[in-house]
Image (spheres, rainbow, N blue to C red):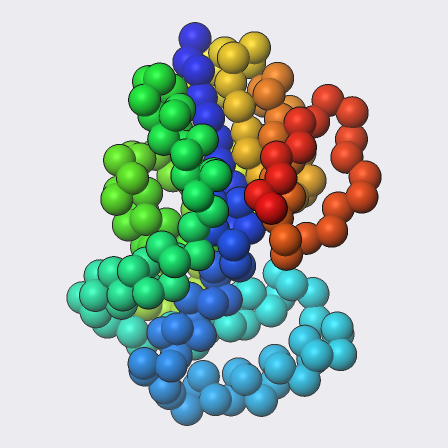
Length: 215
């Protein structure tokens, strides 16, 4: 049996939503006509709450179309250093490090994009991630997902590529997330940590969850 500690990323490890922020970060350094057109369509719809988040995420990702694969590592390093590291929640990083020190299998499971999640994880000594992959064709990013959007129950599907879920030591394993959309993850373990930060205002906590306040 394996003792695991699974961490959500956005508004858990870091105090922001990383996926759309990453696309905007790339667009700021590499403006294109396509990106401008997408903004003209997407921003008014978002402002009026007329576009579901999952559709908006796929639309925004199209801004990456044509980005050379070879350029991604430098962009990712800059994003991690300038945006993600300053946004870390020290309390969560301490929990994460404690699990690593105990020898638990630490996994980051995120709807964020795998290029920067992998780099962020690597710097912490984490080798297991489940994230949203981006499709590459002939050395260029297509602007589309490569497989599933790693959100909600799709995180479970992605996790199955990393370990046998039946081998998880439920009694001693932990999940940390700010969002109850991660209930499929929480259901894998006995120790369910619902993360609450200053960005959120949760008033109801389901039975069986431990509240971890970051403020």
